[in-house]
Structure formats: C-alpha cells, structure tokens
Image (cartoon, rainbow over all chains, first blue to last red; front, side, top):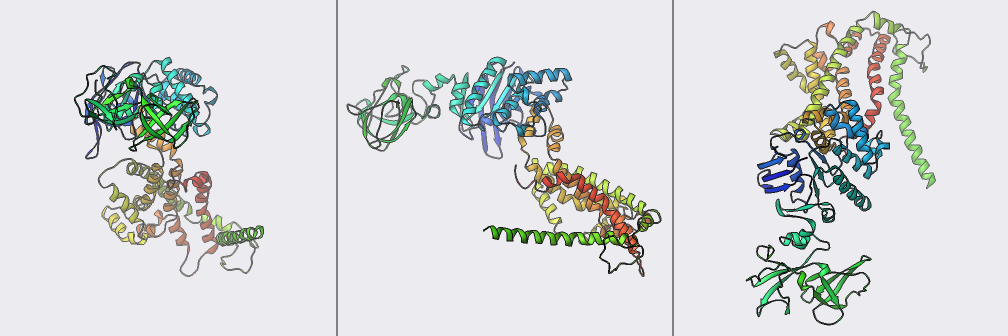
Length: 357
Length: 277
C-alpha cells in the first residue's frame, strides 16, 4: 500500500491550454479520495498523469516513497478502471481479468487461483468463459473491477466508472465499490462529476475547477463549510442559494430586509459594504403569512419525502427551498420566505472566498 | 400494397438473376472451352460440358508448358507482397492513426492522391527507378512495384479501422503492464483481424493478377508470372484456346480458395473502418 502525493503538478495541452495548474494533493495510504468537479475541470487529467498515460509539464508525482514522473504506466504499480470499461473484446472474462497477471508472467496455478478469487468477490464465477459483448453493463463493470483488483496494486484509479450505468445499477455498484475498498484497503482515487457519488463514497473529497483545487476535505466539512462560492454551489443538490447583501445602517440587508451577520463559524463581521449570503435549500422556510421576504412559487418538484419549491423574489431573484414532503403548494401563490440565520454562509463577493475561514 | 411489394421483389430478383448470369456466364464459358477437345473458341453448342469433354488441356498446361514455374514465380511474388503489404500497412496505419507528427496530413493526402492516377502512368517512373537500382527483370523489382501500388489503399484501410478501436483499450493494456508496442501487438492487432484480412487479400490479388507492370519489368522467360505466362500462350497466328482457358481456370483457383477461406472476415471487414462501433 502507498499514499500518493502530487506537488506543483502542471499539465498543458498545446500552446496555451493549462489543464492542471500547480496542483498540490496528498492522498493518504488506504484512503478513498474522490476528485469531483464539472466537465473540463482537469479531474480525469489528474488520473492520467498519475497513471503515466500523460507526462506532466512541471511538478512531482510520488506513489509511496517513489517519484514516478519518469516511470512508464506499467512500472507504477497502479490499476485503472476506465469510464468505457476498456475490456478487451476478443478475450473472455477470465482472460480479461488474467491479462495483467499473464503480462507479469504469473505462474499458471497462481494465476487461476487469483482470477478465481477476484471472480468470486465480484460474483463473476459463472461468467468466466463469456466474451464481454455477452455481458450486461453491470457485469462488464465488474470485470473491469476484477481486472484492477486481481493484481493487488498500490493504488486504484477510477475514472467515472459508473457514468455508463443506469441509475439503479449505479447505486448498487457504488455500494459494491465502497465495500470492496473497505475489504481491500487499497489507496483509491476516484473521479466523478456526480456530487452524490462523491459525498457517499469519499473519505475525503477534492473539488476541482479550471485546473485548480478548490478544496479538499471530508464530505460533511465540505458541505458545511465550503471554502468558496464554487464549492458552495457545486456541492449540494439542489445547489445553495446565493444572495447579494448590501450594508445599510450597519446591518446587511436584502431588499430592505435585514439578514444579520451571525457568523456561524464565529468570525468577526467583515468590513465590506456588500457580501454574498449562501443559504442551503433546507435552511429556507416558507409560510403563508408572517414576516420575511415575499416570493412567488414558480415550480414545485414533489419528491415524496420532501418537496423542492422554486421561488421568485420580488426583484426576480430565484431561490430554492427544500420543504417537508407533506406540505402542498400551488403555482403562482405568494409565500413569505425566512432563513435559518445560524446556517447562512458568507462569501466575499470580490474574492468569492468564504468569510471567516 | 402487397402487390406493389411483390412487384418490387420480382424486379429486384430479376435484376439480380440477370447480373448473376452476366457475371457467371464468361466464367462458365472459359471452363467449357478448357474442356473442349479441339482448339475451337467458337461453338454453336450451349452445353456446359461439351461433347467429348477432356482434361487434356489441363494435362498439357501443367506438364508440357512451364505453368508450374510461372505459378511458383507468382506465388513467390504474391506471398512476399502480401507479407510486406500487411507488415507495412498495419504499422504505418497505426502511426497515422495514433500519432500526430509533422507531415502526417500531407502523407495521408499523398497516399490518397496516388490512387487517383491510373497504374499505367506509374509505368515509366517505376521502370526508370528499378533500372537505376538494378532491379529490372528481377522478381524483387516486381515485388517493390506491387507493394508500392497496393500500400496506399492498405494504409488507409488499416488507419480507418484503428480509428474505430478505442484508445482506452491500449491504455488499459499499458496500465496492465505492456509497452505501447506490446499493447499494439496484443490488443490492437488481434482486434484488427478483419482489416488485416482485407489488406492481405488486396495485396495478394494486386500481385497475383497484375499484367501490365510485370510485362514492362520482366523480360526473362524463367521469371514470368502467371499473367505473363498465360499471355505467351496466345500465339500470333494461332491460339491454343483450350490450353489458354485451362490456364485461366487454374490461375483463378488460389484466389477463389483464398476468398472462401477469408469470407467470414471479408463480410465484416469491408464495412469496417467507416463506422465507429
């Protein structure tokens, strides 16, 4: 087993496109680290440079105590699961799983035992003689996992492995991969654009955007104390509401309604004239009367246990509220919106960084 | 509606039957002539097996003419062209598909452009080139000429096919422990079997049935390939038509055998490269 460390890693394509810009990332030994971010943020590139499929332009990559910058993929002792599964179509399931072992000239009996064990773990024992084209999506995914685990590498790399599966299978495979990690205890770096996957699987999550690391933290820390506006908006579904507040008479206000800076992390009040207030949908409440901001219901998404209500404030600003599923709403009705003041996140509108960190 | 469908079906079948007859008739005619006792080309009989059918012409061509020598030369040239064609096209196609290098676009385009010129236009330059390097009237010279003419098509076929193989497969193989060449050899090449078959067949047929270039390059009788040999059977004043036809039938056999052997690859191979699958 081994930890992974990227120090000052920069990767450029062509003349001017910087995909990774001075990335510093440490993944602890046996940790399940998730890299998450929107398309084009550089998360897959991190895996590609780590696996050796792409060279880096600057920086150092360490796996364990070895600097691997100049090592070929085959010498890095890693295994990778591709989004497309990348199963060898001309080989049976057995041969697909055994491929890496054969290349490494593993003795026949040992090879059969290892493949058998991996197939057993992944419930593939009765599929070993089949060709990939005769398998379902979930089974193919398992073969790809089998090919990775059979070698017992130092590091697992997963590149959006569940994105080709249907929703139900995705949930099932998510649990299987997590269970597999707990069982094998191999350092894992898992790339996804799906924040639900990230939150449910990762021991720690790194959020990337535009080739920069935005924040690395445990899932709940990331959710409860996002380091900046991007993380705040990216993590959480529906995303966090953001409102621009202006200071009047010494109090931050939105359209004449005061939203006092309570500083839920105990920070001092910023000496700014305007701030961004971030409020998670579950911290927005609505009532038919009383105080608050008047808002019109523009869309209702009943989910059963909860209802997502989309609201428009008087100036057109949109808000999303997550309300208990038992309550009923009518399109077009006007409600009074209130916020849980203790749960407001404050961001500097210029730097977009969290105030109070 | 049903009537219209039947009509369409009838027209399609009639067209296909006609096309089949037009295609097969000359072949049957050649076989028929090869079985005739005399040297008569024309006969009023429509019988497929002529009256007094005999295999004498085959005996003559095989044992009294240097047919086996021509066959040996043709096999030597064709097999070498096939091996070289497959080896060069599979590697060159791979380079054009997977790598970006200066001259890539021009290289591919010039391959394509070379296909636009008729083979006869290449005769003079080929003749001069081979004369310069001392390979005129030599089988290696013929091999070089054939490989050069077959290669552009083969490289494009191979490149088109490699384009349809996801690069992920090679990357997975490299992570699994292979070098890039190893991944090419163990993953890409086996997956390219249909394209390789097409390349092999095209190279073989290019060399096997070619006459014009061979006529210009080869002068010695003992270096004649089958097309040259067959042509030599046609005399100035009299042609031994039965022998000539028997020779033609014998020349076709290896190609037909190859086609039958590679048939299952060909059906998928001919549609490959064009569509990503």
